Length: 302
Image (cartoon, rainbow, N blue to C red; front, side, top):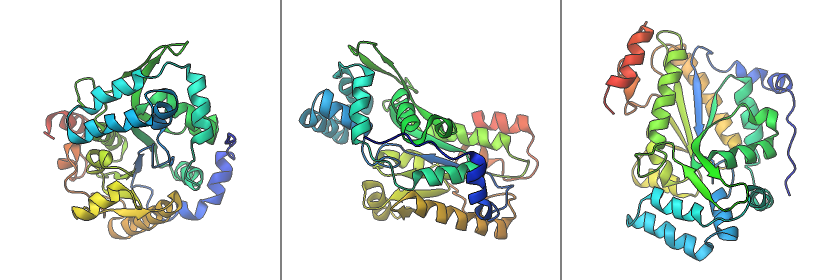
């Protein structure tokens, strides 16, 4: 059973990363988005629950195939999977705690993000109460509180008799449209930046289901050997494979240094994704008034 790690004070982490913090121009805001299952953790939290306490492995795989074939929507199948659970939350969490394995370098990477003022967001099709509890346990509540979780809420009966997702995007067949969430967060980040600066958006994932959100990023990291990397290779999509989050940290340092040298943190990032939409179509010019940026987020078509 993994032990909840009490993180060092943020001040300590900052001292360890003082050199890294000077690599990039601080005017350029970097914002990280990461998938959870299969990316931060090697296993899928939902699969652990369904296989051990719900519909079982065989039925879960059959349902997954229905999503892949297009026979049924992700949302419809997910509701059936979550509905197969009839155990209290604590019983389910005990199984996850014994089974889950966190990327060996994730905690150090997250402390690096804290030290360098890089917002780190988990973006997931899973259930927020589960993800929050897992992060609190593996990182410690103090450090985990720095992570914003963008996922579906849930109603879980105290006796475990019913588990029901509360979908983030109720009108979407996905339940949670990750691409829309990244767009929304990117617009919010823009409003917090100095006039004339454009945030660098980073996405980290492992599966093809991450692709819609990944397309919204300037920099895409794909876990090596998994489906998202293969898809990117097959379709000539720019990406950087990684084995652990230590690889991501080194590459972000390099990108920040490159951006500082080429742009001094002004205007568009050196690694800019021209396909990314919404506010960035109008924010490349300097001194965009706040009210213009706000209305542009709404009015520019996807």
